[in-house]
Image (cartoon, rainbow over all chains, first blue to last red; front, side):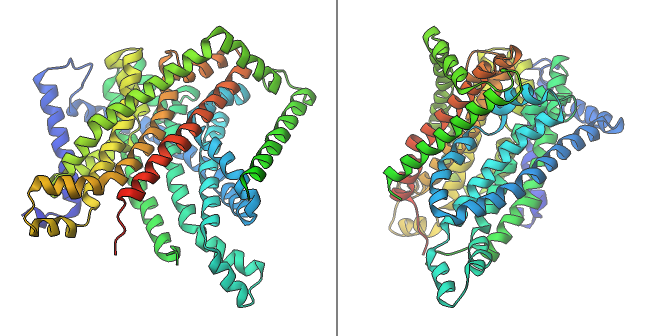
Amino acid sequence: MRARLAPAARGALPFAALVAAWAAVSRAGVLPAIFLPSPGEVAATAAALLRDGSLWVDIGASLGRMLVGIAASVPCAVGLGVVVGLHRRLAAVLEPVAGFFNALSGIAWLPLAVTWFGLGWASVTFIMFNTIFFLVFFNTLAGVRAVPRLFEQAVRTLGGGRRHVILQVLIPGAMPNIVTGIRLSIGFGWRALIAAEMIATSTGLGFLIFNAQNFHQTDTILVGIITIGALWLLTDRFLLQPLERWTVERWGLVAP
Amino acid sequence: MTLRERLAAWGLLLGGALAAWTLAAAALPVPAYVLPSPAAVLQALGDLVTKGILPFYVLASLRRLVTAALVAAAVGVPLGLLLGMSRRVAEFVHPVLNFFQSVSGIAWLPLMLVWFGFGERTILVAINYTVLFPVVFNALLGVRSVPPLYASALRTLGASRWRIARDVLIPGALPNIATGLRLGLAYGWRALIAAEMLVGAHGLGFMIFSAQSFHLTARIVLGMSVIGALWVLLDYFVLRPLEEATIARWGLVQR
């Protein structure tokens, strides 16, 4: 019986159980409604926020910042990662440095960003750039370094020049790492964005939930949390995971 | 490249960066609070250490992280293993765990503030939540990733369910558990810094956030360096060796 359920239904079933449990808890009145609104109230709030367009504005603001952050940092990080990765000595020195900045990713940049750029989109972009850049740079570097030298030597033996080695061995060989780095950095970036929006902006999903907290609007907070989780799951499931799988299949190396 | 060469290169890099930074701080026509000199950061370090503020904040942040790590190991690992033992249960809870894993603790923070107020309790709940879910999720994945062949082999030899769990499923899941702990703590460390900023309790996140209000930029740079350095030390000397040792000892190579 269960085996015949469509995968989508099987994925939705646990969430239905979760919502049912939530409804039961809120109906039993264990917690006051201000602490835990019922699923019905949260759905009504979501509908109201969608109708007056404010939820769309916040979703648009968050996704827009995410895209700006990605567009600004990923090309720089991949380019620089490949260039540094080509110089093995330089790469050995710079890898731990990138690791240090990796550890600093995200919200730790916020106080400095606010000092330099004030509150607003420039601060958020600065935080996003630093978070995404170093993770992608680090992974690109590691990817280029992990390509077995045997492949490089094989191309050279066959008369390939430096250009061939770079374009046909090192970059394709590093692709799986690069894409994994991008996926990871977007995960960290999304978390950093939500935290940054709470402090440094007046739009976006992070601001929505933090501002609602000032007025004890737990229904709005829950709408925001569910939106944040759902957006990430959809992006990961339908964009990043297929991209990663495809890259690994297309360019993945099995070390000899 | 030998270690000595590498150390020399790092020394050179660090020296060059410090020199460029000092020069920029001295030459650029910006106020000191926009770009404090390395000397000012060192002074802030001496100042905060002698006053005992920095060690106190470092200990506060580390204590929270270690608490969360212990809770995740004591509660999250057994829970994940247990849920992973049955294929049906694992399939059922998988999407829910994935959802909770991907909503960071920071997104729950506004709700936790309503529930637990501004204080230590909210910070602890936020960091425990952030560390726990990746650990449970990965422990479950670990059990499920053990090839069924091994369990079948033991069953053919007459092993009980408990024997199979003890000798096959749990050891087979250990590499995933180590990876989950490392990832959970990486997310947790960042969430902790953010929670300390927003809740305003003592700790490194609070230190850099409150310094911003007073334009004490040297203190911000100092705090960031400590946050980065602590994580690098933790990752290089504790988490990574743990993960590598587990994979070397219990990792499965499928043939």
